[in-house]
Amino acid sequence: MAIHITGAPCSWGIDDPHNPNNPPWQRVLQEASKAGYKAIELGPYGYIPIDIELVSNELSKNGLSIVAGTIFDDLVDESNYENLLKQVDDICSIITKLPSLPMEEGQHVKTPYLTVMDWGHDERDFTAGHSERAPRLNDTDWNQMMNHIKGICEAAAKWGVRPVIHPHAGGYIEFADEIDKVAQDIPYQLAGLCLDTGHLQYSGMDPIEWLRKYSDRIDYIHFKDINGQIYEEVLNDHIRFFDGCSKGSMCPIGTGIIDYPAIYKLLTEELHYNGYITIEQERDPKNSGTSLRDVKVSLDYLKSIGF
View 1 (spheres, rainbow, N blue to C red):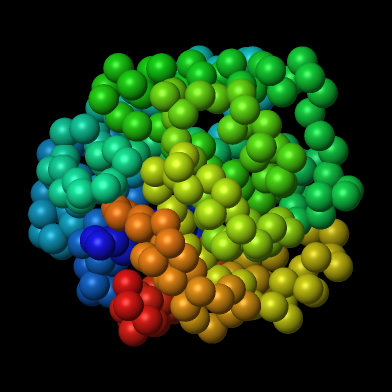
View 2: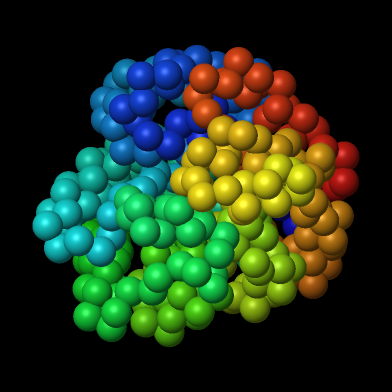
């Protein structure tokens, strides 16, 4: 078994690349290295520059590789489709030129991945975690989103990059019915899944059950943990998903409600997962001063239970 734990800029609060409170990307790479990571995600489009020489030098200085790039945008609106395709080309143009990570025996597909997440809809942002209240797309809009995802996947494939669809709280691919529909509508030959333990838990699903259910389609995994008390408070508030994260709904792994020893047992003894898992802890970038401490707590905890 070979599982590698990697990081992501969202643990420093980087979800909106234009947020003026974001810490410098160079600091994020430095602190990721100090925490003990050997690889990190590129983060949302526009945060780390699409400049191969500049980024390569900074990664090299910190002993880091890139495990994945990210599409985190409106996948539904037809008027945004050309923008999405441009993002794919820009992201793939840099991640394919960086040093590759080792591919382990039993790993489904090689890195780097392109995580594909829907985002940017107020009506869903305010109902994150509430399956019974959240509006669903009608058939026309759903099929349009599926066509956009297929186009993104085909564009990534031209670069030799494996796309992985990531259900995300607050987007139109979040809940059990939507994950099942994606699995039906997007062939595995076109894209894998990147399931996230925290988003599954947040949105009313048991991470153990869903990792098991789609084990044959999971190419990549995200780990996060949830502060149970703050989570309950946030669900009773009418606020956006990331406003809840700013209140502390996400916490260092091992300090929240998700059973990571059970997940370790599932992945290693039953599913024989090999490859990469990325730690995330969404937060307000104003609070990035504690990011290094928290990501190290998460990484140290996972190592302590066997990862």
